[in-house]
Image (cartoon, rainbow, N blue to C red; front, side, top):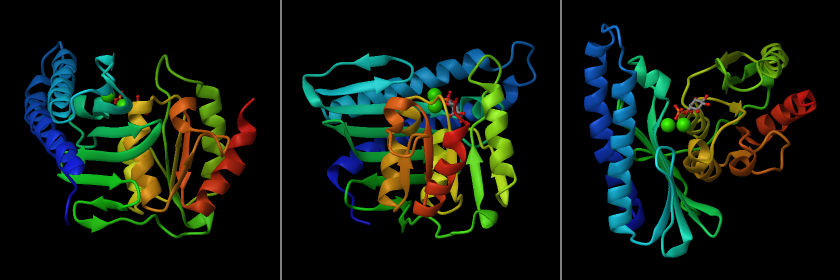
Length: 264
Ligand code: IPD
Ligand code: CA
Ligand code: CA
């Protein structure tokens, strides 16, 4: 696959930070047994990965703005371009040595996502997309699954944990979806949930209370794979509402139909 200069920059940055996270994952197994646990170590790993990404991306594209989960917003001279980065999506998985986590890098131009990379260094799966050029998993072109029967679909969701989100609403949503689908999953890394829908592994996914860096790269990877992405209302923007529903056209519509009325 011939890669653009921009994609080269993004992939190189993701792979370098990925090597660092993969080394840190190895350490975590040793730290699990200590009383203090690996939480502080993970927070350092997370920050280190973000600094590496910032260094590489800002060196290659000086002036672009940068929004990272750890370091917040860093303005650049070029007001039309912004990197939106989660250096470690799936922190809880990482902390527990579960190999479902990723680096997520999105690039926005004038408010529109134009490129995205999601990289899981644990299994070396690299998802990429550029506007108008399709989505790829490593070298393989992606397309969302074509299922049109909800009772054949496997759907992923997010679950609010202690101190976060509306647990009661989440239970109502699960009950409503559970009785219509072939399987419900909770993997714990929003970026990869979206990438899995793009890859046709999952038929759909929804979650509330996310941040732009959880979804920025996923949004373009999904759209370029022929998927539909919105907020819970069906026509709103996930990056501004923090809520996401995605799938093929049919699954997206069905999920909106089920979930939208549950909002009070
Ligand atoms: C989290 C993951 C998780 C989602 C959480 C996110 P983090 O991101 O994407 O799947 O359910 O709400 O905050 O904290 O691991 O970067
Ligand atoms: Ca995240
Ligand atoms: Ca994170």
